Figure 1 (cartoon, rainbow, N blue to C red):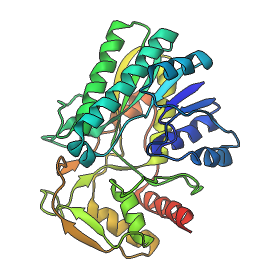
Figure 2: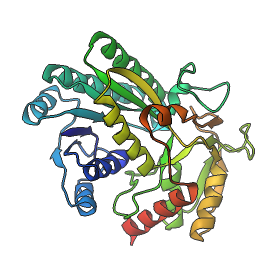
Figure 3: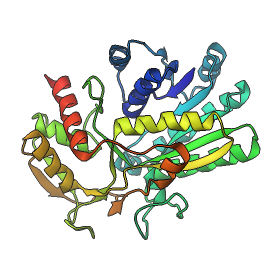
Figure 4: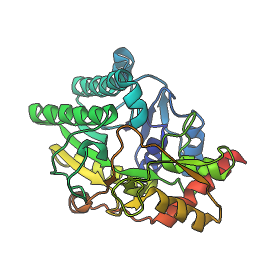
Length: 332
């Protein structure tokens, strides 16, 4: 059985679908802080199989230990963390407490119960303000915000454990910017409150929930002045986890791998693509830069293809179309 901590969230739910369709048994541990229980119904509708569920906070040592006692867990995919750069700047202690506690609690339970395979959700934010792009795994790391530092520290913890424990295997996946939704439009990104990420904000503007998009900064050193990122379809990210699980189960030690497309798109590129693909005008206003944001960030995904046999398949049009289909489905 594969344990997905935070598995009812955006990336976790898509990964659960891909795991089930690949023949794995899935256990989700989630406290629904930023997700909804109904996602399990959607996963079951898509796959014909319902994941097991433990509704717990994975900072809770006793409940996590009891879960490992109850299930025969082969590998852990650790998604349980907070994820908003801006919020982390405003609430750093909340981020450090939750994101480091969840990881350490889970890894202690793994050691106690002899579970040696870990896939960790890291982030391109660990590259800080890079001198050059695209970003390669061996580049220096350092961060501009507490969210990034939690990922940086978590990576170090995992690598130290793998160094100390000869049987341990970990794949640290540095995500770039997942967007889009499952083709069924049954699961997608549905944040509580005001979205912190670009695409759900765009789709909420398109559906009339919000009057306009705020574009945070138009004076970056980029072709149109707006921030450039590597946007990747969430299903491609999910498939990257399947490849990482398969790799971890046959190798020891820790590996760091980028999951991105290798293409950089600006905020306005995304807006224009969404408008073109879906035939909807997205009004926007320029707002001040957000604390912790950088000008551009996109991946060199070569290692993922060489090590894991994985590469992104979906294009930007599919990301924009699938995100809008999902939004229409949840707001109709």
